[in-house]
Length: 265
Image (cartoon, rainbow, N blue to C red):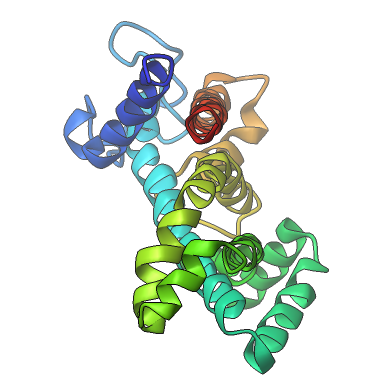
């Protein structure tokens, strides 16, 4: 657990910043000052200002709330819904299992980001529509993983013992099945946080996610891409924030997987 603590601390710090972002900004992230537009980093504006004179540091901090919180909420939704669907399919079997698994096959046939771009474009853009586009296809992986785990659990002695003891389906699922697959689902979700952050930022960078003037890292990179040579801090600041956040959660997922593997052996 000691080896996992630094990564939990780093991830917790990022989440803390995201939750309390509005109270941590040195300036109003949406206040424009055209006279101070594109000011390089200095002692007043540590990360400089953008083309509208808005403080880049303040926008990066507030952007963490949009990017990280949206990714965590989206991940919680698809992991919960997908796991419940997969567990139900694995437990019940029959026509419901066949239908939902064939439906997941259809979604898995499309590259996730390509499907998300098409869906978000059809829905008209916006952060909510971008999240919905990713959710439509994102649940399938968790459903597949949960179904496979439940099928393996059904062959274990304690599963038969629970049925012989007269436990109902709901009790078996929530008391005996879901706790035994929670570790694998948790590790998968931890490893997916970085991916979802990248996908949401990517959709915003393409103009299909957060809409101006919302501070969101992908949208900030999109707004600053034309100034990469003249004012590189405008695009490098949110880009670095994405890199640090994705790397932190990916490392956390790797260490969490190693920790749970050691616990199970």
